[in-house]
Image (tube, rainbow, N blue to C red; front, side, top):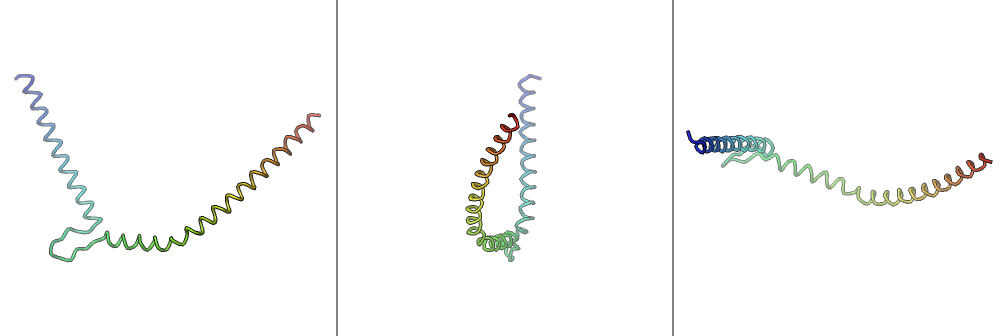
Length: 105
């Protein structure tokens, strides 16, 4: 056999294997999506789990919507506390350096 025929055969086998793997993975993805979104039914009222999930997420969004103003106020308070702690840190650093200077004398 010619080298090119062997290479072409290997290439065709590789391409065929790629397409088979692609088809298997696409089918697996479809099965997973049907598990999430409900079975794909025609001419029957579909069972849609995604709409139930969307409704639950909307309820969570509404319930947590009241947190935003409180978090903003909390951030401002924590910022002022941080600034105060930085001032205290600076003062304590000065006290420590002065105590160390006294110990050296």
